[in-house]
Length: 327
Image (tube, rainbow, N blue to C red; front, side, top):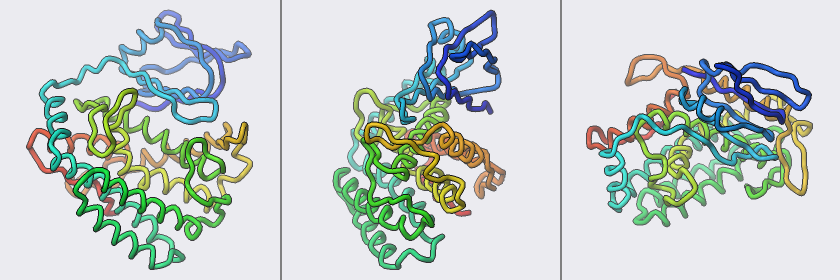
């Protein structure tokens, strides 16, 4: 399994023969081990050309780009080789079928709620009333007749979940409520950064399957976004991103010195990004014993397995059961 490669400094990418180099602003050069990586993340301004694009495409390497504040901007991925017209048709038909779309949308959210409650149960300080309220909203969600009703219930659950952060974090960074565009405080900046990294991880795994990332069920398909990535991310954000955030803050490995503010936007500085990404890589490589496959699988492999389960459902091979962590 290939690795992720992170570039934090501005500079340029140069190809010489069959070697790729990154050259920073001081003309310092280092090689990029193309043969052993699957994804490159650029967190600063970078110059590259079509020679580089053509070369990395031979290795199926995905390029992920982030803006000045470290928030995900977009990706380049090579022409997909693992494609299936039949599956694309089945994906589209499932979207057009209201019952089928609702079933999948509810499955994604039900998994998210399972992981949200799993996080909350780890902290005794969380009042019982929140569990009861979320349980009631979960029932409302499962009885929803439209995706809009479903999203409404999900939004209320998320709001209650974020209200619980003050009981779950030893140092809440002054967190009051969730804000995204732009994040105004360190915790919101951390959530936004983590979610962006999670999206790229899911895109990288889904790229290796026959799924079309633009046909989705919970989030409305639209132009200029991989909406199926957003669907699947609902499962993994509380399971992976939030658990990393709680660990970093509660163990005081992340503090206010890891954040900067510019033009009323709060964001992780380079030191903070590296701390989060180190934990993210550790988490993604952590293995658990899969009770159905009877072998160890990493968190990253769980994402790919989720894509395969969705494929099996779409081709009427096996009904989709979303991941619900049992460990």
